[in-house]
Each structure stands twice: as structure tokens, then as C-alpha cells.
Image 1 (cartoon, rainbow over the protein chains, first blue to last red):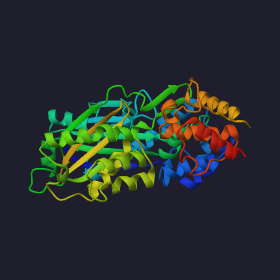
Image 2: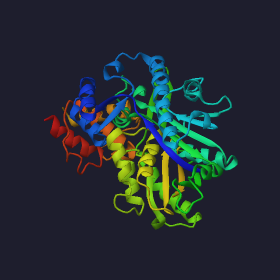
Image 3: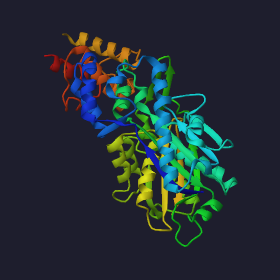
Image 4: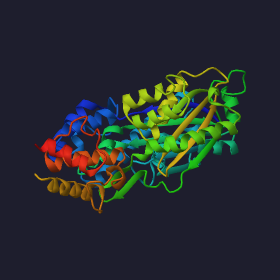
Length: 358
Length: 79
């Protein structure tokens, strides 16, 4: 289960945070007496700007869930195709080489799913195995890597891809100016990421494994952890207006209360300690989540630098975000033999831990 | 505006925006009664600013534990 490459794609529209704040300001001023407080809320998420599925002016014209979801299918197919093409090209593979695809998203729905549309668009083989997954939210990037690696243990000569498409901007609830929704509208952005994973036999054939100095990291072991009775921590209320955010302040508490112990046990079971982890590939959930991680884990300085950079440059892309961080890590890998920990949390509430080794 | 009216305004905000149906007395702990985490605290502050048409400044929150403390801060800002 080797990670060959990570591709990515963004929709062509981009707005910096000041531009977005200016666009929102009039609506906020109608709802809030102290609009400066709301502006500060948007700045406090430490996001510099975000890619958008649509030109900014088009969001005002979106009428209800149907139009937003139509845009998700249209733009999501485009950016999904671009991310897959980027990933496969980097790996020296074509769509005909792909045996299985996992598609994850929590920001739009379609049947046939986006992955099916990409079979037609990109020319995957008719016998490709498709697994679309909805609902894992931010954890789906890490969970997807884990599930694909499970599959490749059974099919070591296969090529599998994990595609995440998240167009969070299309879930914007223009009428909902509650604090949780305002946090979400300041934090989340749009993008797609695609990971190419190959089984051990295939990795050897591709020259990714089997030598003294493998060119790609492999998945050593993974772990899922579910936290009972935490359904209200994060998620969607789904209704006729689309996806309305459920976001409590307990998310950082989940890191403090659960994640440290989970990682302690995960590493101990692998016979490792924190000093063995050369690189951290963490989901950029938001400043408070990352600060909680930095406070509870014995991290070396700058351990989450790539995660902070990703948050600042493109915002929280839900499941795609941790894969973006993985992409940057592959570009500047740790020394051969090093371990990396890929980690994310999401609705459930739950976490996924993936131990990598270069 | 009297303290009674301010207290009633706080109760109205708490009911409408935080779902709190209980009674708010001077010695009621705000954090405990209203289950104030960071999101709910920000909701309370922003909605109090809306309700009383005031701007709460940094530092106003210092020393606020009970309803009476909040009433005093709001009285000062309402002027």
C-alpha cells in the first residue's frame, strides 16, 4: 500500500478574506449591531483567501438547494477530473490503469455519483470498482487513505485512487447568520485532491518499493476511533435549503479529551514513540483545533507548519485538506525510513490515524 | 433602563438564541446556566449587543461570573 502521488485542483475563482468580508458586510450589518465583531470573527480563522466554485456574484443568485447542488455536480466533476488527471499524470499512469476508485465528499450529492461521471469523462475501465462515500466530512481524507490501503492488502497488484471533492462555498446559507454559520463561512473553501495508491506488488513493478530507498511512503497501519454520544459536535442539518452547519466549540475539546490518548495507544501498539514521528500530516481544521494539537502533543517546533500554511492559503477544504498537506509532504519527504502520522477528525465524532513510513 | 429591564433583556436573549428556559437571578452563574463555550459566549455577546444596541469592549468580560456582573457591564454601556 504505497502512496504514489497526490494530485490537486481548484476551481478558477479565488477571493482573499478581505474581499469576502467586504462582500458579506452589508448582510452582517443588517443582522448585527456590532459588525466589527463579526468581521474579527472572520479574521480570527487565519484564512488568507479561498478558491470558490462560482464567481462571487453568482452566489447571490443561487436559489435553494437544487441550484447549489447542480453547481456542485457541474463544478465538482470538472475539478475532480482535473485532480485525477494531475495525480495519474504525476504517477505515470492513465485512467485505464486504475482498478478501483473511492470518492469522498460531504458538500454535495449526486446519483450517479461524481466518480461515475468521471468514468465516462476520463475513460476508466468498465470493470473499475467504485465506492462513493458521503458523510465522513473532514475525516474522509484520512479515512479514505485507510480504506484504500485495506483494499490494496487484498489486491496487491492493483492501482486505486481516492478522490476528494469539496465545494464548501456551495453550502453557504445566506439567510443563516448564526455564529456557527459565520465561522463556517469564514473558514471553509473549495478544492479537490486525488491520491494514487498502489499495492505492494504493483509498487515494486513501478519502482516505488523493494529497493533500499523506496521513493514513496507506504501505509504501515491505520486506526479508526469513534467517540460515543458526540453526534452534536459537528455535522449538517440537512433540509430544503441545503446543508446547514452544526459546529460546536467542543471540536478542540475532542483533541484535548481524546486524541492525545488515542495517538499514545496507536504509537505504542506500533512500537513507536513521538520521537519516531518525523513528519505530521494533520488536517487543518481551524486555529483552535491546531492550537489544541500543539498544546497536547509533544511536537517539535514547526511540526504543523504545512498544515498552518494550507489553512492560510486555501482555508479548510474538509476531506481534501489533509490530502493537500500530504501532497506538500511528498514534495519534501523526510529521510528514508522515517515515519509520518496522517491524522484527521470529523463528524461522528471520530478520528482516523494513518501511520506512514518512507 | 432599570436593572430589572436589563435582566429581562438578558433572559430574552438567552431564551431566543441559547435555548435557555430557566430563571436568571442575580447570583446565577452564566457559564453554568447558559453552558457557555466559546461559540455560545460569542452568540450571547453579539445578541446582547443587538438587543441593547451597545458595543461591548475588550475587557468588559473581566470579572463577569454571575448575572449581576453582566447587568452592571450592560448598565455602564447603555449609559
